[in-house]
Image 1 (spheres, rainbow, N blue to C red):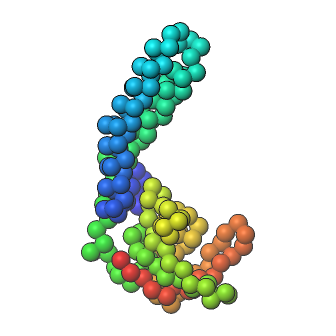
Image 2 (image 1 turned 90 degrees about the vertical axis):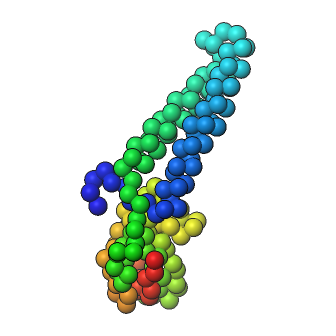
Image 3 (image 1 turned 60 degrees about the horizontal axis):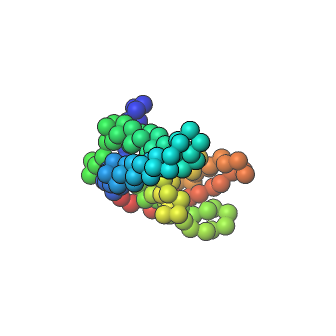
Length: 158
């Protein structure tokens, strides 16, 4: 992937657009109201509520700028022209631990979309990056801090 491009699923792209809209149109108003209320308490030089609201405003604006930048360079994955028999970003991969025979399933996504609780792992994670390019029945050795994992690729779907 070229530097600067962010590859997202349609769902991931829409989630970021929704977050940006919320930060711009809802959170900004909430913070502005909190700043106004804190100012109403008098001297802002020693006003903890005012300082907290201003910090929240700065963090909100930083996240807005971050999302705007990411969305401007985002490319939505079109898996219709991607090989179906190879592990690539956007693929869902069913794996089997060669030693324990335990099976698991992961969807490979960008760092921005990664969500371990939903079995969405980043292509830059040790497991995700090791799986890239492999095919069904390949045994993949994955080096992690705790040792080496051996996974067999059982199924690839999109």
